[in-house]
Length: 435
Image (cartoon, rainbow, N blue to C red; front, side, top):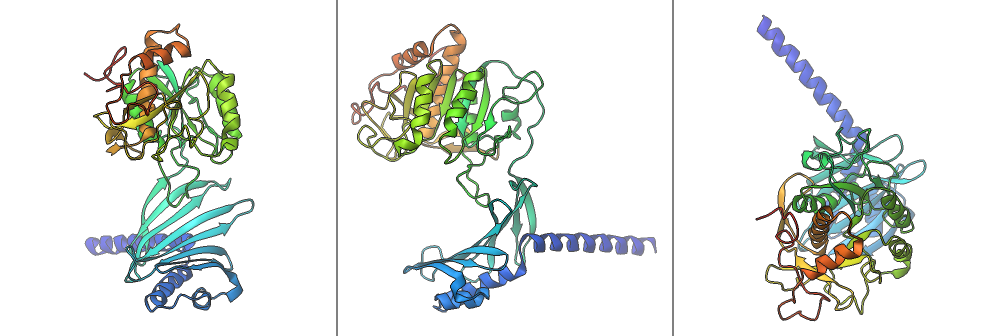
């Protein structure tokens, strides 16, 4: 009898857990949204994609359907429901990636929050389901991954977790301005610069806190873009005695870049890795002025990845003129500019190999990455090693030392970079980490 009782008890616990999970899914994603998604998918497969059709499947008045755009392979629209505003996109039958996709926007007290994403394949069955849980301040806290049809919770991914405890590791400080870093990875957490209380240096300039977790503020929390961890991992790998001060960039609040530079200047870092940029000079003027105002900081910045000459088509901050700016681009191991690499005989100082280079990504996995963004940490790491070996050197001394290591690019491309290329920045300068 005890075995029967045990089995019954286990069944009760299992049913309770199933019920709790089902309730959680219902709170994250209303079943009506799933029904509407599938209905739109079915009607699209039948060739019906009109405004009236979308209104009927979402059970709203036709005037609640807006921004309808019908192309040969794609239909998009915004739909205003009772509790959500939906963005629906339908890749029609015959298109390369046929699917029906739904993103829901929930109106909060002070901001608009993306809350869930549904996607159905050609057979109108769910093949991608995600939801976001927000904290009490209205910031994205967790990305919930669901699987199956009907969906069940598969895993949770933190979007703004606390920083693990630790102590300052010592060494040359390098400021890293990017989408943040995944400081939950031990190899990152152990290398973070900290104060005497163990609090990390650096800031999240988008959320205005000290949690610069890797999550591009320009992307949706439902489809987060991670960039900073891979860049930072490469920097730390090629400067093993450096410590990192991470900054999560402020998104489109370009004026905040000035405050960011001021914060860096008040700390121990004198080398700044900045693998980012944009095209409209007026957006970046305050950052340009801040760079010039702090000649004691050496800014290693990306030339960008548009395959263009930034002397004639500028990219900022790379195209600013400042003595403490070192602009870098990416070549392959033979010194040939990558197809997408920007260049400039005046604006771009040096190139380094940064195509299909190994680094550690946000998940902690070894991956191959490419682009001028990954040229930045290689040169910043070289600058850190030079600075560590020559503590009295100025930023101009460090910049001159790096440039002196460059040799002309092989043809074609000799005239595309001002000072040439460094064949392998991890093998030159003081204390190279690789042999």
